[in-house]
Length: 142
Image 1 (tube, rainbow, N blue to C red):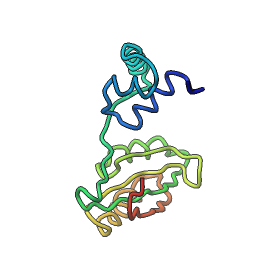
Image 2: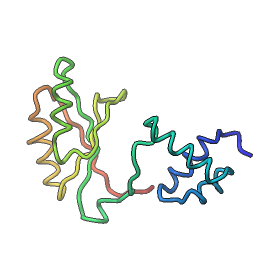
Image 3: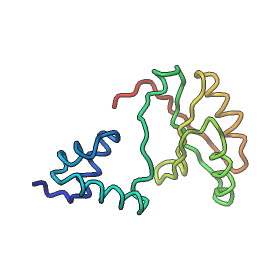
Image 4: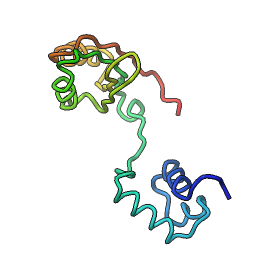
């Protein structure tokens, strides 16, 4: 048996295939189906598992352009700027960051020109946003 805990093995199976049946997860984690059910129920209750989703490549589905945008924000306006960014429809995900930028945003638009417009007209127009550094995604590799 693996040195991973039962919880880790169940989570690994779910991360690999969120649609896997309890039987498939039980087989992969080397536990019974009732054990899988118990752990999943508890992980959902504890907020460890917050949802299940399909992993879709939006470029293949709709031809959208996607950029990861490093965003710098004035410290005194961080909370307000973050709230405003969260409300933008074109911002699909927003992360705080300890890297080169305070925030990282996944931004999507119909094409590269529209994406540039979103960054210049919406993101950079937010009070407190001091810079936006886009990296346009070309191809999903994993």
